[in-house]
Length: 451
Image (cartoon, rainbow, N blue to C red):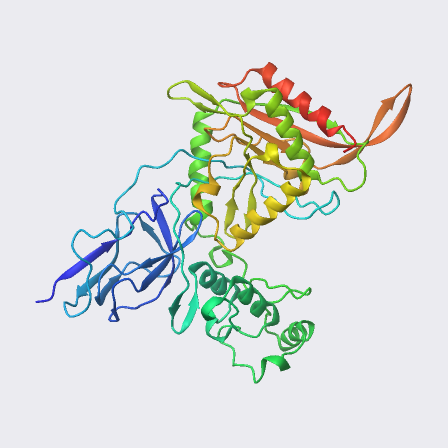
């Protein structure tokens, strides 16, 4: 009688209590070999491909795409085939089973705003969100499944955009399909899932023609009027009126926000930064980053971590600012490391790099934790002042509201100046009101400079 093995969901190096099934690479009854891709799972920060721990026949699979599996619970069951290669007993698989101690929570926030652009007019802002991760990094390799080579993140993106990977022209190393390949295929409509294969790629219709043809035929197109890929069905639209479980990033953010609310004693100070003197070409995000750096150097108590359980405080010499990136799946918060050593151009290039890594799900776990203070530019949407959430161990977060023009008195007369509303929320267990006020004063003074 053949032996059977129950494979339980490993912690995937994330320290999180569960993960969501993205795609199974096998079905019940299939025979799989040791270390061949079994399933791709989405955690709070990445899509990770889980290999098979044995060689044998698949007996059970824990749910379908979109289902949540608890860490340590059964993921699949196999009937081991002794004639195929097996892993030696006790050999390390690179994954650890059961629950791992959760690491200290890292930043989370309110409203999400993307970060890109390079001028005041085009600046897309930054916000801060929730993210918990360990320092373990899972290296993803492009593995051939169904004759197509692609990393898990690319497969997940293809599913979201309705792209058939088998029909995408691969441009990556060794014939692997890249993220750009998938986005291009979605944009030109050349590899839509379920559609008939085009006669010739070179003869594809222009984007506008494809969209127009779809509209005239009554079918929904995967392209917007601008020719950009979009969802054919809004996220969660099939669940209106029905409760549905939060998944991935949003699920983790809910946990971290609740924990922060229970631990922190928040207090907020508000004021307006007068930027009337700014010369053309100033980058809003870069100026906010520079002002925060100046404030942290003048008042180190705001650039710190606080341990409420042991009543200890850790001051930091470097300034690592949490800069969030908003995606369809939720909010990611990579750290802008050593912001105190970057000029405006360096800030913008670093933010662009972090955003790209998040979109492609190639960002290392170590980049998503450990920032010393946070920035939320919620004003890119709306709002003047806010009380952004401070998530331990950090003790402060700066919120920038929507810039506006207001009348100010000047030498007995009045002028119209442009101002940026600022909010500084701090953990009153770790910082005094005077320290927070002096920090805010430095921000106002730095932002008032012409450049």
